[in-house]
Image (tube, rainbow, N blue to C red):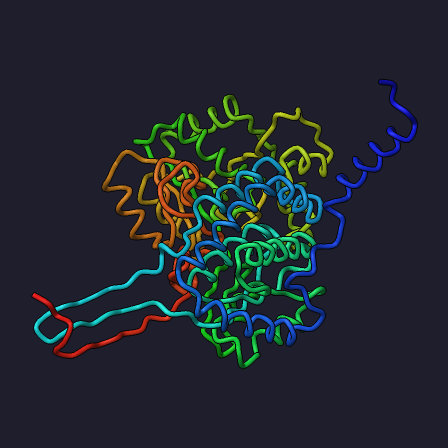
Length: 462
């Protein structure tokens, strides 16, 4: 059958409509003009959620997981288009990871003691309405992951997303509420405002109906939350070092480190940010990084040029964050093949491209005279953030010594950094890693209160 002009126009219109999805305004569910209105709506919904059975909450969470899987590519493209950070392929994987490995109601457990004097229970109850601040680096991933956990604990949540990722964030919030409504739950299990600002964040943090605030972002955001007078969960900065000792499988270590460092262009806060290598294997490691893992060796002149661009005026250039290696090199006039994944060089630990957390695929290699020196330099580079660190070693004693010295919420041994999030490793997924306030990898149970219920001299049946 011949194709008419009208049919062509209809096809073009359909294609254009699909192309504009990422630019279309997010849905209206959970989106308010005023922060106080948003909080009131979340408060009303929480009264419903807290009365829901675990099965009812899990039904909503199951629908959320399904919708994340269905929209993983759309979320990924929206995030890259809006923020300019990361890459679509890895962001798709991250969304599927959130859907599959974020704990739900199974994380809400009861502890019981039964004896001659009766029965005592420790149960997890909701805080109520939780305030949450989310980053531009992992906007939808953080919102989706947080909401699953908070809802499982019987809470609702008010988000103040990063303004640079507002379209993606509001799209995620709308999807969460659609999942709730489709599953027989209330609207407004997650809410936000059309235009989040520092002012709306301040309203949220000071509001009398917000007992708990979870902040995922830089040190400034976490400090503000911890100064609010409220209970705070602070997921702040890191500068994770990857230590390679003389017992490591050096070839595998090189591959693992580059895979972790370049995942989503180094946006995950857990990603390898620099390498500390024992001198006896440092040359071998550099060889494998360059010859087998598509790394570009930057000259001293290129390092200086990168420093001027990446740390413009001594401050992190946000236009460089989450960019791929080829793009970063093009910013200093260096043209490389498309397969180049990472920029490497050797330098002292004080080198600005090593000492600063960059969130881009640039890996400085610091040479250590022996293992003890490597540990000392790695601890210095982590800057006391207690966030994440990595080690490649076959020596259990060395791994143990490093673990005690670095004292981080996450320590990955002989694997890419993303194994810590359950991607190629065991365990659950989270995008809020509260190293500063001590909760570590947050999950549903993190967002609950512990309550002791005692029945004296009764209900002990033996």
